[in-house]
Length: 380
Image (tube, rainbow, N blue to C red; front, side, top):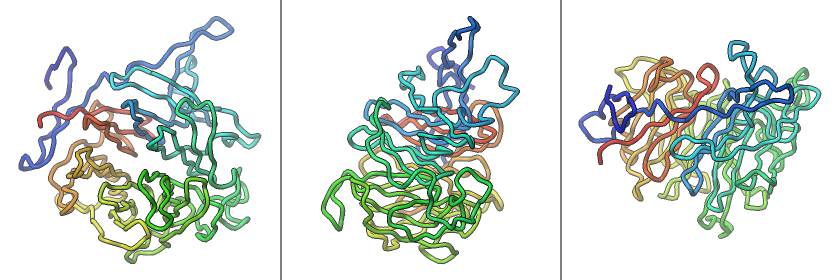
């Protein structure tokens, strides 16, 4: 442990051979969530539920989406005075809550009535709009940065690209796997989104929306800035360009690189698949470090470093609760940090990763973890 600026920080293992940046956890990020006084005069404590994802806006604010407002979103052990935080909580770099929003209204069946159900991925585009996906229904939504207005919805709320007999007892029976993988207007439990600020290679227009349509379907699907279908690729299977057939979340992430390529997580097959922007497979990067034995879901999410060359890639390994640092061009693993546990710097169900402009990393944990952690870059 080290004491830096009055804050106790855990020193994480150094990168192998000094070839990758090193990080240390900030155990005081974020700051405690607000306490509010109810109509009964009692204090109520905000608590987040499962954290679906985090993303970063142009002011380096960390946008987090959580499921605390859903039925059973908070656990009994989280206390009688606890109330769900808003679905979207935004922090500054110091960990203070700078904004929060999101309509928590539920349907009679207990599904999110306004926001995507099972909110999962988030992305902030080049206009600072916030995009949210839901892995339990069929929509991706675009919101103003302050959440005051929904600007676009791709897909139809509660209607997915799947057969009507898929999940007859679920709030949205057509949502889930195996989906049809074919619709040009409907999605099926999308996991993640990314918006391209550069001209589309086919249309020449900016703002194409890449969706990892992966919890019911098994495809990357691209829409224009108005939500019109452009193209898709991917199917269920173990071949090149395919995504693992069962288990949900395949593809689980989509990231657009400065190199003009599309990076997609095939987490069930422990690999990153890299495509050009029209869907031609360029390469496959396996995430299978031999010294750590067999594990599953090694490629759950990725982030590319913020230097112009994007020298490094950070890969979330849900199977071993670790972050792998790769040299992006070669695909070689050059460092790592984290381990399973509940202490600062450890992970339980680490789910997504994002970097700010300073190169600091923010990790979201869902399921048993249910929190966000910040890792500050140290050294050059």
